[in-house]
Image (cartoon, rainbow over all chains, first blue to last red):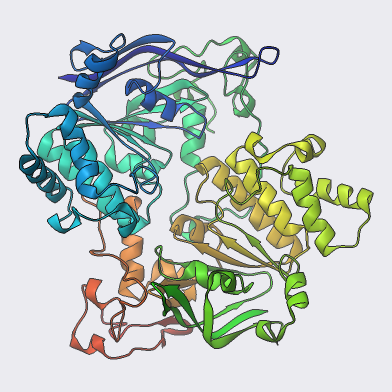
Length: 317
Length: 320
């Protein structure tokens, strides 16, 4: 069952004044589908458009073109109350557990807030019972209800953030870098919790991250983004074991080593080459670029937006 | 050599001074990198900041121990000497490139300020030096960069500028507090390359504060693992990865996603790091340790295991 679908999304940010106006295309023609119980990861460097994508599908930002559907419903044109009611289907967990909770609200009120909108028929006692039940499923106890966010550690706050999202029983969670602010030990606890919740409730996750080892662990499929373009997509196994796009390969090669014996004596200290404005956006950094690349319009062919995908290369890189 | 001897620190917590670092000893040698590893709240940043006596501005007190730079105690230094040392002999690269630069001053004025403090170059020479520093950290078009403000720059560029500023006083030692945490993998790799190059060229000694074992694997010569305010294991980097002796070190390494196969649950350390003031007597890791026994309630000191350079604070080292 399809729970989230994006079709040909495009987002342009305008900046500057009347004489200095400039446009930056943050997302070019992005499409994907997400099925119930599935995890789709979006990876890429900062500025690649992954968080913008999350906000577009949440309808927190308006796309300039394209269509977003939650479940069966096209929500691209919904406004106001109609949109708010549909938000029960899709909820978001934010990156920074310190900034995303209201410091002046008790945990009970923070988590119950969604119920006031989506289940107004419940009375205070019923709401509290539901909050406790959700907290328990996220590994927190009843004793936290009357406390404030500053009394919790980063990992506990992220559990609260997840409970807040789950209270309205959504089908989809959009997770924007949910573990990147956490220590490894706490990160492992949160990733296990997400897996458990997915098994129990059949949730679908859109998982935004720049940490490839986390993505490899949690996701089923992955979209690789560069400069607003999807440059490669596929199952985790295919993309991680046989990357087709030179950018994907570069990203995988930049992963931190896991043992000092793998240390390379001479690491290349490259400069920031930036993004090409014409043709393939990755051309300035690509070790395999050819003349034709400056004419390429970044269309996906067989899950990879490259004229010279790696398995077609004669020389091994 | 920069050396910490039996240092204990207290921090103000709810109106009281509570011990947050206890009996820590470390040595940072010229040309070598020592990594200080641990979860948040274990006292690693406090220890690092004490090397510049920075914590004192936030009410951190030294209750025991000493810090010496080439044999001279930091606590005997006059305020003036101390000011020259900060950013001079010992420089610091702060954790968050997004907040460590002042948003209302241009990059140029912030770098020139450091140069003016630590050298007696005239205006033109200082400008020249700033350009050289930017070039050394791999930033092109220095002239334009000097006129820009921090908000116009990416995280990787800001981190390079912070590194350039740290190098401005021509330091012998660098303290890098989580220098790559906020950065993308590709940028991270370049910062690692940069730090290693600067270290080789200038023979810098480095203290690398991090919770990321990937960074430790890339950079460290020696590793000290901290837990609840004390060092629980110390060894050369190869031994930490090949034969971690303390159950906490091992648990920390097994938490990493790459240590587990796809589809399986990740290994976790149950519970949280205890806050200062809530430490157990004896081994401070005992409540979370799968190997704990009654004897773990007795005080335990760092003891050598297999080699004199490999020390661990665990009664059951070798058994487990």
